[in-house]
Amino acid sequence: MRPTVPVLFLATLVLLAGCSSVGFHGQKTQTGVFTEKKPEEPKLVNTVLTGGGCVDSPEHHVRTTKRTENGESYLVVAGNVSVPDASYTLGKPKLVETGWSNYTLRVTGDRASEKPKRNCTGLANYTATVQIPDGGPHGKFTLTVVHDGEVVHRENVTSQ
Image 1 (spheres, rainbow, N blue to C red):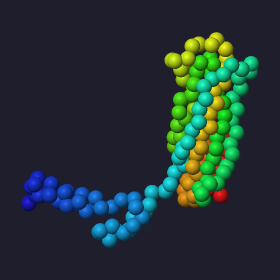
Image 2 (image 1 turned 60 degrees about the horizontal axis):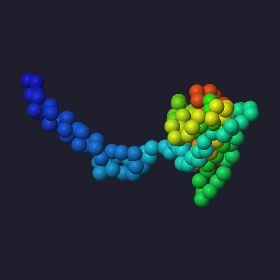
Image 3 (image 1 turned 45 degrees about the vertical axis):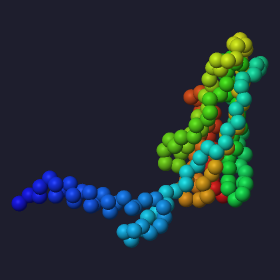
Image 4 (image 1 turned 180 degrees about the horizontal axis):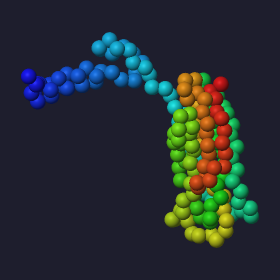
């Protein structure tokens, strides 16, 4: 004899109710199952952007500095992006995971509608602060910096 649809539905609800108390909190749940805490990932915690300025030779540059503050480790990425015109600004940088232990910081130039066109090649500056996880699987990762689709810097980062 095959179970009826209401019996299967009820069995599914009971199963789902038992699973709903399981999460990523690193603690014992009501069902007695121990769960693991989701590992911390690198995250973008601060950005400072400036608009474009006219320059004779617009060259990308990136420099990184590691710093520790209040027991947390950070990688400060400072650079400039060549933009077609000094009226351009930078969009907020984005930190995205691009593979296991690989992260990309994307920085792009945007046309600023409120600024008049200046007809000169420009550079726009930025500083992005990335929090480095303290150990775990993401305590060691590769950071790639991309300006307007062009890879300009790659660095291996560790939490120590």
